[in-house]
Length: 131
Image (tube, rainbow, N blue to C red; front, side, top):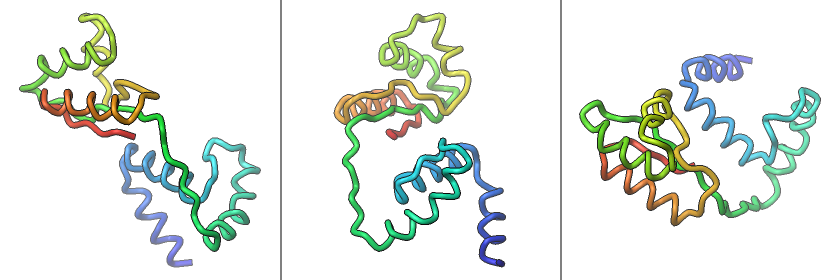
């Protein structure tokens, strides 16, 4: 029981972004869907045990999202220009669009497109990740 309590205490310290990443990793590792109804959560324990024994079959991801995590104050103008071109939004929408971070700037794109967009944003000074 102490292990469960230790894990619970560690979970309480996670940021929302870290918690979101944790959920994604759990879904990926155990082949479950966190958005399943509560009854689905009970059923997830049985497949998880079998999944640990079986050889993991990892599907290759083909669609990616470019997530803007941070905009340094001294780089806002140059980053806004890149965000505007990548997200295909109007000048007056950029500030509102980037008001809450992290924010997906481009979703469901190829790995090559995602890497190109990430590079453009990083070159402008932004902190970015591909998910």
